[in-house]
Amino acid sequence: MNSAVVLSPGLFTTVQDAGRFGFLESGISPAGVMDDYSFRAANLLVGNESGEAVLEATLIGPSLRFQGRCLIAVTGGEAEMKINGCAFPMWQSVLVDAGDVLSFAPMRRGCRLYIAFAGGIAVPGDLGSKSTCCKAQVGGLHGRPLRTGDELPLPESTHTAALAARIELVPDFPARVSLRVVLGPQEDAFTPQGIRTFLSGDYTVTPVSDRMGYRLEGPQIEQSAGADIISDGIVMGAVQVPAGGQPIIMMADRQTTGGYTKIATVITADLPLLAQARPGDTIRFRAVSVEEAQEELLAYREKIENFKESMLPVQDAQMQLSVNDVMRLMQEFQNSRIGVLRLSNQQGELYLEKSSSEKSGGTETDATPQEDCREPVQDSVVISPLVGMFYASAAPDQPPFVQVGTAVKKGDPLFVIESMKIMNEIVSERDGVITEIMAQNEQAVEFGQPVLRMK
Image (cartoon, rainbow, N blue to C red; front, side):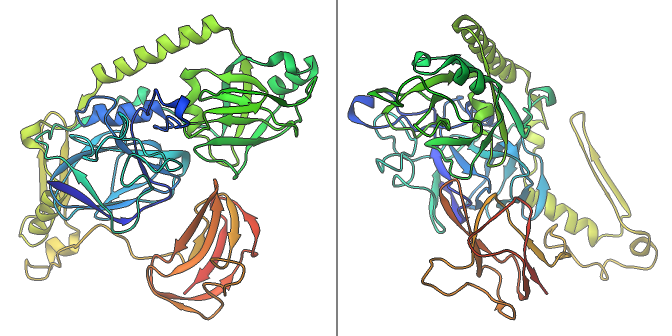
């Protein structure tokens, strides 16, 4: 059987499908993907049924080494996707070969990535679903997020037809998100002013947010009575308001029941947009009727069908080259006497050209084959890949990972960022020596903020 070895798990990377339903009375949450649209699109791009299990990663994708040939597709938030160090586009399928390594830079926009494999992921289903529910320790790979060294089983698949999404069907992930909501079921527990505040205020996604719920911070929502009610069922998108007046939007790993008043529910068609909101993003709410929410749900389902019917072929299946095939071709071209090589068909083109010095003064024995497309490190500043809290050590009673003058190797831990209730250990991408520490211990840092300087 084919497989993929986890070289780095990324941040909270789990196996997810559409969810596990029918067990709320037993206290088991549905789990399932956060962004349904990106999930279904990824599966369609590799020829799967739209509900097949995929990998979902948060803010930073995993690094995987493939043990055999496989067609993959990556959708979701905007990130630089690389295979063997070479950049490849998201929202289209790519054929990888044995030994190829898939990796990602931290996401620039959006919050979650989805990786689909032709034929799906060969993990057993629990209670009718492959989705990972960490609280119940069921589904996915041993009921937990991926770890370094895990081997992800992949079925053998002969599907190699690469497809791409039409650009107009690739979603945008703005930092200011407008969500449509249906008021209720307990809107009568809030004053008219409280409802006006909810519908007119700007709310910020806090780092204390995760797959269970998004905690927001903004204008306090006034209630007409206490925040507590007799516990009742909770759906994805329900907006709870505890006594402090700050809303919490319940998400895929929500508890099955809750005892706080719910002022509104985000409509199903807007949940994928909400799932891609990241700490620091701004959310505003707009009330719609039940009838409008139903119409938008039908339009959303039509959009999925349109995606399926309008995918574009990247190459004919029999012409599809793996990444290793392309790399071997580039090496052979580099060692040849040929100055320019152009391969093309109706779907695409590969164009290679040597520099003038190579064509005029070099010979085939002068050329050095390129091992990969990775560029040499040019920047000595390590930035925070997340919004969150900076910690210099793994725990308060432990020494810092590094200090000024510390020599580090590639893979050594540098610091920890706590974001979305996850302690994320950030490691060095190269050998070097720490020359400056720019972040303060136990202080908030922004995405892209300089944290360390190395030489």
